[in-house]
Length: 79
Image 1: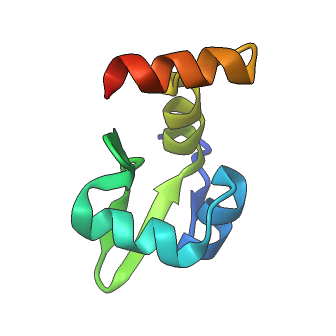
Image 2: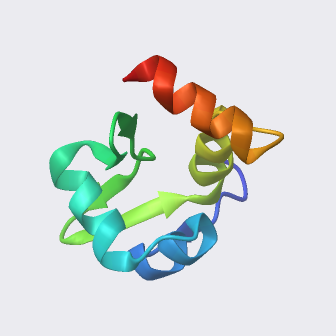
């Protein structure tokens, strides 16, 4: 992990665009959103840290859409 920057919960949540509480809860439930696993993290003693690379990888792994119509279609199909 050369030059890996470790972020705390609040900073990681800001990068992901979610609340710190939502990210914290995802570590207990295993899901950040319904059916979407949260990003991987390190537990260092009592501290939780997210490598910036893990956050970038997590974001790249998420499904991307070109329109809200595509989102709506995806939600209907998965229901």
